[in-house]
Image 1 (tube, chains in turn blue, red, purple):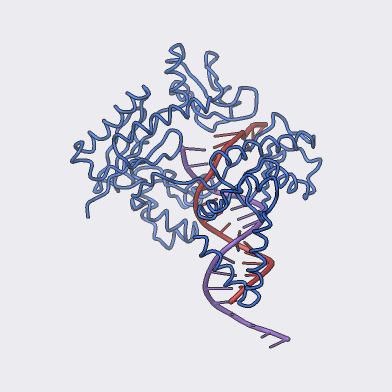
Image 2: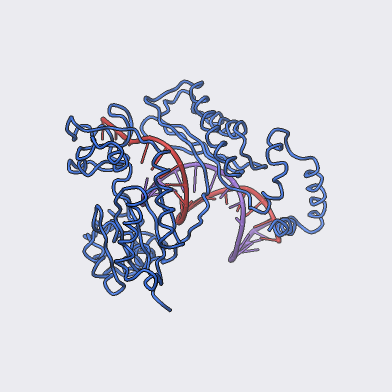
Length: 397
DNA sequence: TCTGGGGTCCTAGGACCC
DNA sequence: TCTGGGGTCCTAGGACCC
């Protein structure tokens, strides 16, 4: 069995680089893409010139503004434009390997196992990927190559910007050991301190801990995963087609609000956005989730599973508004509100329903459908509900 | 004092079924 | 009347990632 080879591509300061590419006068200057200074929000991405002032993604825009000099450029993100650039990059990468997994707008994994015979040694494959991106969109990327996804990802992070790092299987532990333990996936703001208070600082420190000790600190599942990662073990699979599982829309108000009409209108807007995307993608969801954040960042969700899956704006809105009204929340200042749908029907059952997909949303359930269920209910009284449900499932698949 | 928006995954409890 | 073990689905919260 031959060794797998995974490549991770990470565009350098993606949003900021697109803006600098399209506006030469921005080049060489600190530039921030994100919220408007003076308002609520964070930095989405900033140029390397801005990073020299300690500014980074997810930093509150108020703090970035305090740190950066007056000549700094502040821009609101143009997601549609960045998405178009992203699509061109992903298409270009398919010339390197047919197995491209888009992780986000500016990141991808490629399975390049066995490509050496076609292109050459791994370094040459990495350089080819960078060249292909530069030809397609005129941007630089950092590339990491390793035996699995974790190592490839950390390798692309190792030298930035415009880097290329190759980590072979026998170099994995030497590569991992000096890095801060927070590079391991799943060790974030809450769980990393659990290990740091034991005096652990690096991946090498974590690797010296036994599986039992890690499970004790982090729980069985998380402990097992961190143990594996610290030993350089991670998935080496690349999946080109991954289906999304939910669609949501939310917004943070400029100031906290209590106006019920405004809350209702905001949910109506969110339902239109979500419903539109769902219908574009030909999906119907059976779970509607309301999300609300009050003054003080106190956040709650409420969800409801529907008898009939939907993609209709009005239905999504009414369910979410109903969830809000069912609580004793009137009068509490709201910072954020939004909603989402998820829980798609299986493809087979959705296909069977296709004919009345959109009619059904307006006209209610199909009476013929009701008759079928009545018959099945009669059968179920004889044989028990369990067998009925299994029987229906099987027919759908 | 500040903390966006769009996601995924995990946990844990309760209802319900066999 | 009291009992268990396995399984699925639903719900709420929260950690984490880009």
